[in-house]
Length: 345
Ligand code: NAP
Image 1: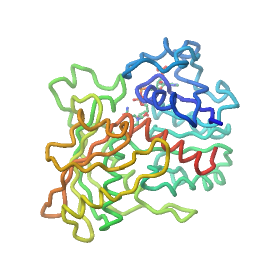
Image 2: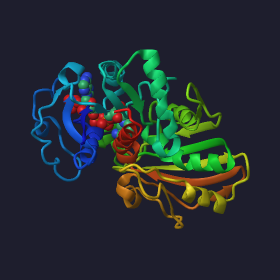
Image 3: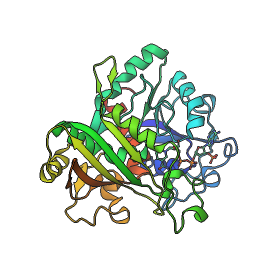
Image 4: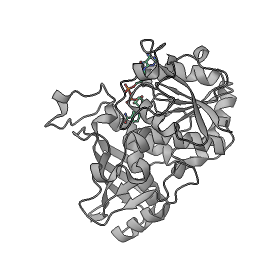
């Protein structure tokens, strides 16, 4: 039997991607869609300015959007996927968890809280059991689980592979991030056409902190953060989807390019319905990965890296992920599948 799910913040860029991922899903059935007051009461097809490729999936356009409030979402919905602005998520996600819903969220609020699991299933699936601690501390019947920022998720799986094989000491990263990462109303065409924006507010700090939490350990009671030093510089470029990142990594044990590439190839995926078969695709062509050519690898769930180069202090490689799929909606759905597999629904 499929789990009845809702999408809170269903009309936005990530919400639309969530609907594309959830509508054909065998284990999940879309049963509720929420957005802001101005969308509530309208059919989804009217409330959402549908901009995702392809039509609105069958049966979704007629669903009436409701307010983002626990009293407006049915009791028979167990799992909510959240794609709300973080200022809204901060207010309503705990209220949903308190009301008994399990929330798999994209929003940045609470990602660094000690009792909130921040999870990439292929990297730190064991952190999901932090929910037990969260329920004890907060007295919730529901739960709140987060996926990381889209720029963090683009580099962390290859970094986890390096950490497992050689130990990771420091990381410097420079990003080239697609405009969809800012949401539909994020950057205007006048700002981004023929241009690069050399700063994305708050993004550098997210990459620097979330990476340490994701790569940290969990002993069943407490998280210990990894002590890797991360320095990030984030740039917005005029691509539509797909974040490309130049990553310099220093490892404890020497890792040559061939060994690092082998570690990437050997990084296992997980046995969840939306997981890619090969988590990290390693390209031999120095002109790859490219956003337009590689963002859709394995339905947008795989990470693509280019050939590894040696530097005076370590290694350098390019990493690419689809920011609204692997970096957002697809990441939340994978976390929803993990929650189901681990018996949290
Ligand atoms: P977006 O396009 O602006 O969509 C925001 C959604 O939230 C819409 O459904 C909107 O509904 C709803 N909303 C806004 N204010 C609300 C309120 N006061 N009460 C209830 N609902 C409200 O944003 P997005 O790009 O999809 O991003 C959503 C979240 O995911 C953000 O926290 C973002 O940081 C995070 N994220 C985004 C990406 C990405 O690549 N875009 C990646 C990772 C994480 P209306 O249509 O009714 O206004």
